[in-house]
Length: 294
Image (cartoon, rainbow, N blue to C red):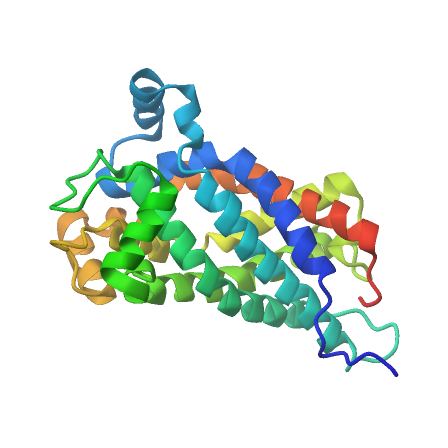
């Protein structure tokens, strides 16, 4: 009996985990600087100096367990969903017909929707571990590690607590993943001239370049990530922000338009190497499994 095209294939999920781990290792030092700046301001260079002088070199990977697990799971979901959606969508094209850029972008949208449910709790724990002791906890406890943080929030505040900032996360993921996966293919076709090829067919260096380009595309809606980080690092006991809209208003009132771009520099510095590594790891793993669609 022929296998239904709607039954998921797991090679995209597995490859997404491998790619995620490559991206986390390369990108985590940039990420902790970004989160510190989003919550306290200052310059990236000064934040890096303070981290190294007061907390040591290994602190650049502080809070890495949640992204290794959470980002691994989130990327498994996003890349797995993207690959399976591409396979389903391509089945409606003519035999041998390559997916259009708009189809790739639409598949990315579906990936972003499902990814938000996994990335929100993982990022909440990571962010709270990265900023604790650095901003006023306003009555919240300090956690020994990421696992204690997760369990404590679940016990005290339930699912609602661990999904704080979900609306902002969903907006970021829908917009970001549409641009991320669409941008990856756009770079291969329009910049490297592979009009009749997908990015994975262009060779390792071009895959990395396309991945770097995709990373910049993902962060186009950067301002919503600032709001998400502020909401997720906010005190549970005595919150500063009542809602996403309230956080927007307070951020603008306090810091003006520039307040929505705190931490932008390390994010942009991180985007290229982290996403180049991510896509290289993903495509290398996918090449072992192989694709039966374009």
